[in-house]
Amino acid sequence: MMRLAWHDSGTFDQRIPTFPERGGANGGIIHDPELNMGANAGLRKAVATYLKPIKEKYPLCSWADTIQMASALAIEHAGGPKIDMKYGRVDIEAKDCAPPKSREGFGDNTGLPDAKPPFGCGASTAAGHLRNVFTKKMGFNDQEIVALSGAHTLGRAFKDRSGTCPFGYGEANGTKYTNSQELKARKDTKPGIGMGGGQSWTKDWLAFNNSYYLQYKDQDPHLLWFPTDQALHTDPAFKPTFDLYGKDEAAFFKDYAAAHKKLSELGCKWEPAEGFKI
Image 1 (spheres, one colour):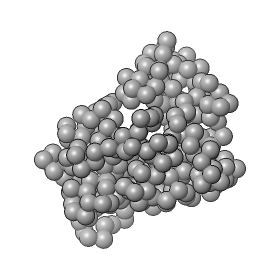
Image 2 (cartoon, one colour):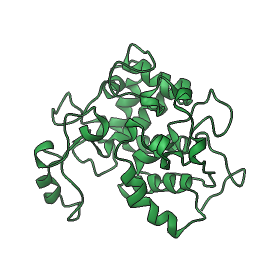
Image 3 (cartoon, one colour):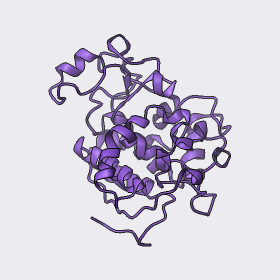
Image 4 (cartoon, helix red, strand yellow):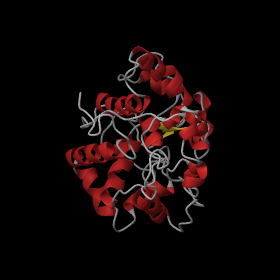
């Protein structure tokens, strides 16, 4: 749910002034022009299996709102902060999905960052690439970039979906934290929680906490760590915030909630114009 919402919002480009051409949290990801993009592999399940029944039960709620609400609630239920959301996002139709050329050079044209070089935007470093995508394109500062990156505390990457991870599905394709036996043994999961496999950024990848800033590949080869993750604790401007969040989970939660709210509202058109709270 979190990845789906991020990838819907992540098409936003602040250099494009008009709606819907500017992209953003507009529900465009439910349509094939966006859902079929390589970086969105695996997200069809989130739309069709998990959210479609809810959307059909509550048809007055837009797809864009449904997606962002699901993300915020998933984070809260995983132990993360409550996010001060507002609603009233207007959906777009398939014909209005932002054309790939408007986001050329950014992460498989979804507008999100590449995990590994060569970086589509032409940056020579991972830190430069993060700033090209999150600052120049979306309008986030360094502190917000580090806070948003902490969302990697949840979930796993799969070779079958991202192409950037060596681990696929199944018992033979997991780490010691993600294999099927581990899932069955965990006290915080229910039977049938899902398939084993993939690679996580943290040991406790079903909990939203600050472990992303404490557990990383330098210390454990079973954990995933891309160059864009590494940059957060090596770049001189990113590192102070990275270190702070490792020491102070409350500070991370506060800053993450604010940055997530901002992300969830990128590029939106609202009805009513000021949005509403529930």
